[in-house]
Length: 471
Image (cartoon, rainbow, N blue to C red; front, side, top):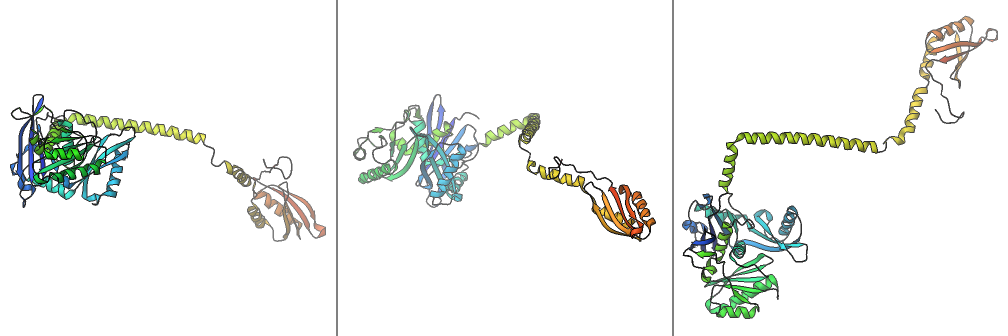
C-alpha cells in the first residue's frame, strides 16, 4: 500500500458539516484546509456534500474518515474478563442484546479493547452501535457527492483519535476535555484509555452556569465523584467566567489543551484554541486517517479497492505461481491425510489389543453350545431310517439308547427270517456301523433283541466320572 500523504476528516454536528484536510509535510503534518458547510434542513446530508471533492476515495495515497453524530450512536463502556477474540465478541453480543432497546438485527455494532485494569484480570471494552438505516442514510449522502469514506466511525472515536495523535504527552488518568465554541461546548469524558462519553452542551453567553452544571452532571454520571484528575480546556479565554465556574464546581486542575507542535496550519503557524474548539473532531479523524489508525471502531466504509486490485493484478500476472501453490497444497493435504490415517489406525489397533475381550463372559456358554452341536444324536434321522426299513411282519416294542451310545431295539416277529432281513437292511443303509442280533426266541413268541451303533457320533467323556464337567 502506498504511503498516505493526505487524509480528510468529515465531522457532522447539528446542521453543520466540518471538513479538515491534513497532509504530510516533511516530518510534520500540515492543516491544508478547514471549512464548515451548512446543512440544508430540507435536503439533509445529501445537500451538504456539494462542497466536498469528488473521487477522493479513489486515490491510493489519500484516506477519508467520517463520523456519525453522537446522537446516532449508542456508546457503552463495559468490563469483561480476559479472553480470546471469539469469547469477547460473544460476550459483547449477549450484553448488547440484553441492554439494547433496538433489536440487534437492526444494528451495526463494533467494539474496541481498552487497556487491562490495574491489578485485575479484566479489560474495559468500548462498544458502539448504530441503526442500520442511519448508517445507510449517512453513506448515501456521502456517495451522492462521490465521496466514499474509507471508514465511518463515531464522534466518540474522533475525540479519542485527537487525544492519541494530537496530544504531545500521555494520559495520566480520568479527565475531561472541553472544546468550548462560541455557542456550543463539546464535553468529552476520558478514562482507562477510552473516550467514554461525548455530549454537545448548549452554552449561551448569558447562562454559562447552566452549561457548567450540565458538564458536571456528565462527569458524575460517567466517573462518579472524586475520580476526575484534571480538565483540559480549549476555546475561550482561560480567565473567562465559565472557566472559573467549572473549576469551582469540579475542584481539579484546569489546563489548556494544546495540540502537538508538529501539527500546524498551512502557513506554518500553530493551531489556535478557537480553531481546535471548532474543528477538533474533524482534525482527530484526519489524524487517524493519515496515521492509518487500525484501532478505530469502524461501523461502515468502503474497502481499499485500489490495494485489492493491485494484489489481484499481481496474482494474475503470474498464473503458474498460483498453479504451483495449488498443487503443492494438494500434495501436502494428501500426505497429511495419509499420515493421519496411519496414525489413527495404529491408535485403534493398540486400543483394541489393550481392551478386554467383549465376549469373555459368553465363552462358557459358547463352548457348551459347541459341545452340544458336536455330540448331539440325530434322533429324528435314526427313527426315520428304522421306520423305513422295518418289515411288515416285525413289531418293535421299544427303542433305547444306552449310555455307551448303543441303540437297543426290542420286539417280536412271526417269521424269524424277517428279523435277519431287517438286520441286513440296517447294515446297508449306512446309518449304523455295526448291527448285531443279541437274542432271538422263535419258540417263545418270536421275541428278539438287536443292538446297533450309530455312525458319526462321538462319545462324550467327563473328567472325574459322572456329573463332572465336560471336556
